Image (spheres, helix red, strand yellow):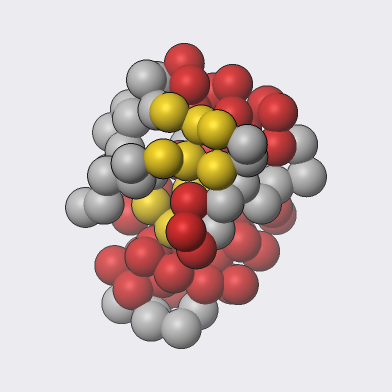
Length: 92
């Protein structure tokens, strides 16, 4: 894996249940601000078991191909999801 991929994996594996971050926040915390789209690519293509459901778009918007599944997983962790949007995003 690249240094970027390793850094993103470190950020994602450090997320706790109920903690939600944006793609941009993951990129910034990994040391690569501005690489939000690349974070999405990693989540779509990585074969590691990562907590992908804890990552949302800017403003808390769910942007995955299966938004119902992501919403269910988030709500199972106590996150409030209304109309495809996470409310009260708890940032790191």
